[in-house]
Amino acid sequence: MAHYDPLVINRAEGAWLTTADGRQLLDGVASLWCNVHGHARQEINEAIKEQLSRVAHVTTLGMSCDTTESLADELAKRTPGDLSHVFFSSDGSSAVEAAIKMAFQFWQQRAQPMVQKTT
Image (cartoon, rainbow, N blue to C red; front, side, top):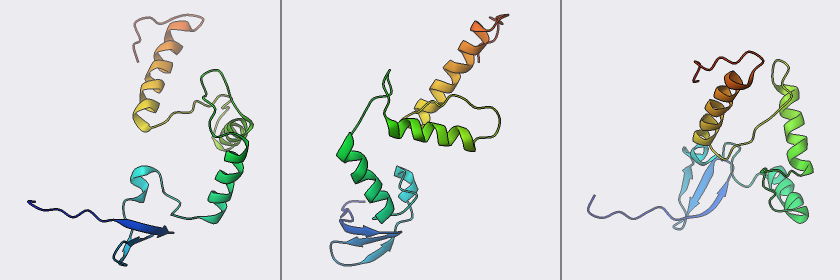
């Protein structure tokens, strides 16, 4: 690969990308970066604008916002079983790390600890 010209994308809509030279390409890797709903979805863009007009970001480190609370409630309702807590994570590896730590803590802090359990 002595010479490589990257694709320059000027526009995207739905599952389609438009390159700087006008070619239309199917975005076959959109889900790689969490764009599973397609590009330029009006309802998603409007929800983002509405949220940004109120607050752009609130860390979940001891704080929350109404959008986060609503999402957590909805996730708990849709998840099987008696789920009453939701833990948000920024990516898959962080989610796995947090799940391992929670499992470890569960076995250590239960009424009858099982300290031999490590995961």
